Image (cartoon, rainbow, N blue to C red; front, side, top):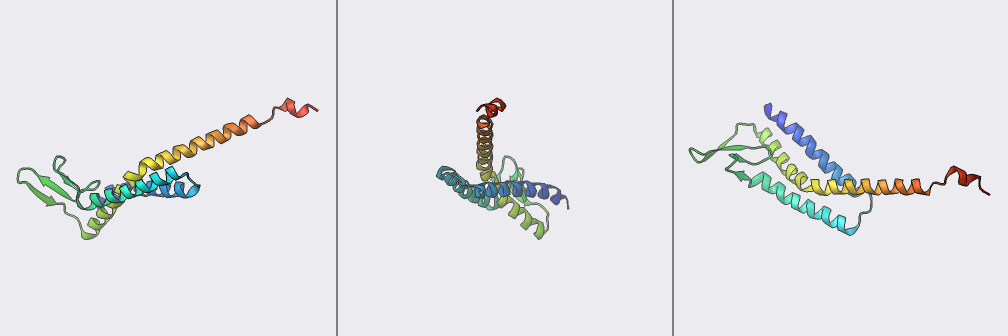
Length: 141
C-alpha cells in the first residue's frame, strides 16, 4: 500500500506531461522544425522508457530501475535484492517507469511548445492593442 503513495503522484504528473504534449501538438499546425523535434523527443522517450524498465542500474545509488526502484544493491555482498511487492504492484511500477521515461524526454519539447504558444498569444494581443484606433480618431471626419 505504501508503494501507491509514491506511484500515484508520479503517475499523475507523468500523465499530465504526456497529455499536454499531445494536446499542444494537435492544437495547431506547427512548422516542420517543431514537428521534427516533437517526434525526435518521442523516439528518445520510447528508448528511455525501455531503458528505465529493463536495463537501468545505479550501483552508486544502490537502486535498479528508476524512478520507482524494484531492487536494492547490497555493496557488502555484491548482490541485488528484489524489493518485496506484489506482482500487480511490480507491473504498475514497470509501466510507470516506461511512461516516466517517455515523459522525461517529452518535457523539454512540451515546455518549449508552451512557451512558443505563450509568445504567439502575447504578440497577437500586442498587435491587437496597437491596431485599436484612439477615441479621438473616431470623431475625425
